Image (cartoon, rainbow, N blue to C red):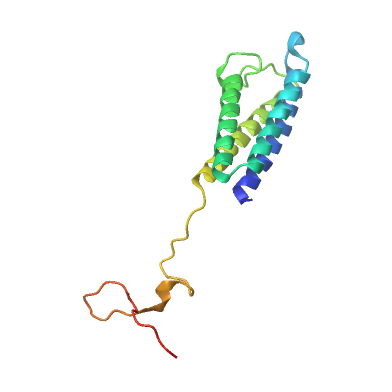
Length: 166
């Protein structure tokens, strides 16, 4: 498992924990009709994160990257709309002042940062492994067994065409 995939799994786990805590914080700041935590929302959030974690763990590198990008883009667009663009009571610019307001706003920022990290890690996984393009060949490469230039007009090295008999 690559470092990017391991980090993406950690970001999914952290996102799940912060998202569930965020639901309880939203219940603390919202007025009476909406101040309870829906167990259905907790079950859906948890099952979504578990499903994404399984896909990241089991699928190939590029498919896992695609899943990560799609999941975190969807979460980020919902987060941006709900907490920054939509004129509602849990918009960070319109939330009622109280004891839990600052913690609620911090949880929104943490969720947004985790979603950006998840998208970036997914993009890294989509890019795949990079080849090492060293300018000097390694000791076991076929280029290390080449003879130097014979004439000044030649570019690079010319391979030995003869086999040494010992």
